[in-house]
Length: 340
Image: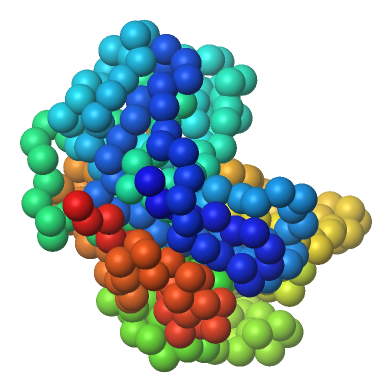
């Protein structure tokens, strides 16, 4: 089959690779209905994450099971499934505590920007629907696999509460999903820090009540002005850069909570400042598997439409253009359709 392989920064190819096979009795093979490009895929694309061998790209996926290993019990061929980018057994002590992204058997999904993919730890990773979703649901179900689950975890980690004030730092796909999550959790005020018109419009559609375009100290000042000098109860940091984390810390009130889900690059902390600011912090790789059943139900019941975050849809053979569009900020998030 053909699949997406990154050979060097800026060099993404859709090329012939070996078909995925069952390697362990806990594996499943799925035929993807759609996949997509993640913001984290842009780090190696831009040369920020070094790699010595070609990378088989893709960790967001949904599709139909075509084969399972001899020990797989929870899914069967013919079922539509959604899985997390963190592969987990869902039975270890960390999984049972709700942190499947720290599973003792954790693996990271790869190779999902392709027509077929192998999913290890299938029983603990995949969640099946009762019926086959129609085509209009595919994008929304795909968003649950990572970007919505990550934004949702950001809101949970930030301790978003009904009636509370939330600031979302970052207007990429995860930040926008953080806005949606905060709205679903009943936040009274949601301040999105965004300076791009298309993203601002989507943030408002998803529930943002205020927009702050400024960054750095100016952005912090505007948020403090909006909150009468108090700051936000909850802050979702969805970028992972030094400046974005400084903004998150700067707009969070004493006793407030910061949920950080942007993969950090160049972020450092001043221990004394953390001590004096008295803020809670929780983050890291999102335990998407914890949220999958609930989020899939919200989609299927029509309560949320996270697939709107895909503002570019391409045939998977044009994946290189999808990377380029996201790198150049011509697209928020690119969905890749798998046909045939």
